[in-house]
Image (tube, helix red, strand yellow):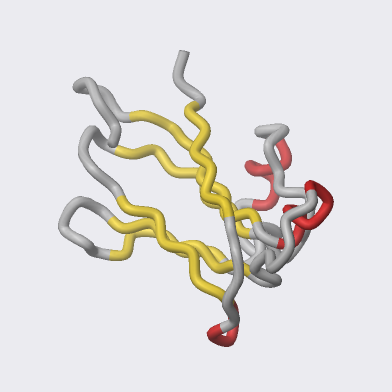
Length: 104
């Protein structure tokens, strides 16, 4: 949920493969990420963070450590949003969704 009355710039990450280095077994091998608005409409999607917005994500210093992980940078209006992680080719496993705000 983006609160207040001003837009907020965020980075949303879907982490899967790199979880194994922290002892997580069964990590999702190739997560895809979707961001939906409060009406359920798809507003952004990503499959592999280097495919879209690569330089912006690198500049954020929050790039995922595995190229198969997904990330989206977006400026969002106040309201509710839903992030959805799916496995590429219907794969299953554990994933972590992270949201970082760039606002002060």
